[in-house]
Every structure is written in structure tokens, then in C-alpha cells.
Length: 128
Image 1 (cartoon, one colour):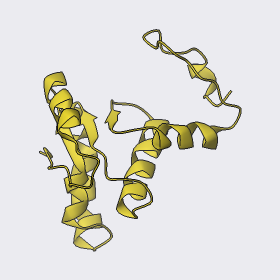
Image 2 (cartoon, helix red, strand yellow):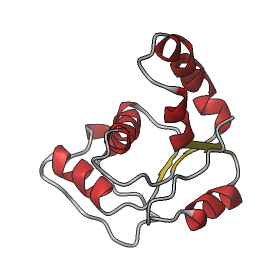
Image 3 (spheres, helix red, strand yellow):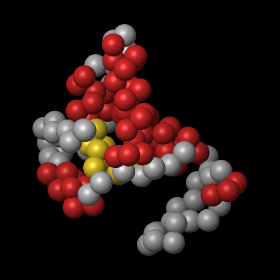
């Protein structure tokens, strides 16, 4: 099973649970069948999946679907760090931040996801 030892049980709110022998297959399936990523506060695995999705969108390997960070206080410091040295040194560009929506509102998440048009329009950002 491709989970850290302390995360061996499935989320109790799932209606369907899939188990993968290899972690990279799990990550590929997350991205392949997604039309949005809603990222809640988490650890290294969460950050890995967030940055992998952003990288794949940035390099046009997958379509530019909404990436929503839930919990503005949790993500504030990390986003500040990205806007600091990485942005000023040109490792990322301001346009990369347009890929992110940061919110504390479940209703806003629904609105962002519903507004997504997979035909190619860029989602507008709610980055704070």
C-alpha cells in the first residue's frame, strides 16, 4: 500500500477507496482523472502532490485546472516564501501564482470549480 505507516486507513468520508502498490501510480491517478485539486493543510505528501500538479500545469503536461488551497492562515507563510526569494530571483514568475486560489470558504471552492472551463480558458486567481 502506498501510504505512510501512520496513514494506513482510508478517509471515512470516501465512497470508493482504491489501494495502490506503488506510490507513483497513486499520484498519476490523482492527476489523470482530476478537474481540480482542493488542497487542505497537510504534510510532505500534500506538498509533493501540490507542487507536482503545479509543475505539470506550468509545463503544459496536464490541463490548467483549478488548484485551491483551503485555509489561508495555513498557506500564508509558504506563499510568502515563494513570493520572496524564488520570485525575485526569477525561479518562478508572478503568472504562476494565478494558478492558485486561496480561500477559507467552501462556497468559494464550489464556485471556482464550477467556473472552470476545461476548453482552455485560464482560471482567475483568488490568491491573497
